[in-house]
Structure formats: structure tokens, C-alpha cells
Length: 252
Image (tube, rainbow, N blue to C red):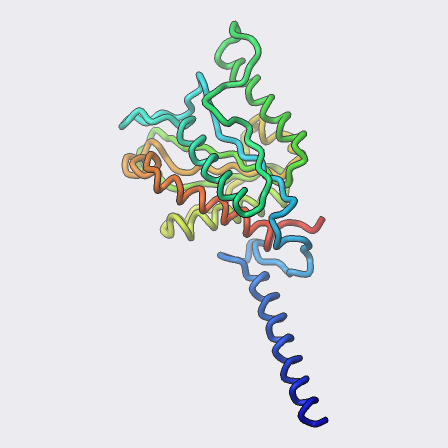
């Protein structure tokens, strides 16, 4: 009887240790800081399995709207964002997520050829926004590239929408993953998207924007057009999404 009790105590102790270690690991996540990115695991449910999670990936621009264009190689934002979105889609689907794409080809979605370019872009964005709102998705990640008149600026930057804690948490998780897996020297923090744009207005789904880098910076542009670097970006976005659902997503 004494031997049986001792064995039982040992087994019970091991089980308790494993349980505590698992809770600690979930609480920590990667890159947890004092900004709300580290939370109690007890506040979150159904966060460890991608099954049932629906992700909308929005590849910025398309068709007649190239987005940013590299002055060095002529590379277009619309092409690179679609490649990154497609790579991210495969990674997410392989992990068990359901993925919806706002576009799967080089197209701008509008109804009237006689519209001005500005009107065509607006109609395309309205159609994307409608798709996002009606998708029943858990999150939306809109993928873009940056450009600026001063070529010194570089590095990925994420944005969150107004009055949405879940959007902020998603943007923080994505920014952290991009920094830790892609650019350790990038000290940018997730920022509020202060300007009103169609896809971030009155969001029905948690939405974050990822600007994957600057086409206006020559060194970064060389990376952004490289297939292996595009794959790394996709892996970082997927890791940020995983971390969001594992650690940061609000309890349903």
C-alpha cells in the first residue's frame, strides 16, 4: 500500500508539473511585454486549434491599381502582396485554418469601365469590405507594402483599427512575429491607423494591416522581390496569427 501511494504521488506530481508548465507557456507567448500582449490563459478558450478559425487575407491593390512601384526595378506592390498572401494562405490551410482571399488574381473589382481610376479603386475597396463583413471570419489581415519619399525608411509596420482592442492585439502579435522571425533590429511598434480608409471603417471583423516593408528603400526592395524572403514574411504572418489565437484573442 505504501509503495502504491508513493507511485501515485509521483504520477500526480508529474501531472501537476506538466499542467503548470503548459499554462505558463500559454501565458508567455512570444515577445510578451507590458502592453497587454501577455494575458492569463484562463481568460481565453478554444485557442489552441486552428480548426474552425476563418481568416480573410486581403492582398492590397490589383489590376490597374499597382500600389507602390519600385523606382529601382519597377516591381509593383500589387504583385508582391498577392504572392505573399498566397504563400500565407497555403501555410494557414496546411495548419487547419479556413482562408478566404479578397482576390486570387491580378484584378481590380469594379462594375463600370467608364469610372475614373479613383472611383474604380473605391468600388473595389467597397466590394472587399463587403466580403470581409459578410465572411463570418475571425480576423482579417490586409497585406501591403510601404513607400516614402525619403528612402532611408525601412522595416515592416502593422496597424490596428480605431476602438478595437482585438485589432490592437492582432497588430501587436503580427508586429512581434515580424520582428522576431524576420527583422530583429526592427523596433517599430503596432500603430493606430488614424486615417480613415474604407477597409478599416466600422469593422465587423477584427482587422489588422501589415505593411511588409518599403519598396522605396533599395536594400529592402531587393528582399521584397526575393521569393525566399516573401516566404519568410508569410511564415511570420502565420506565426503572428497563431500567437494571436493562442495567447491574445478575446474570449468568445
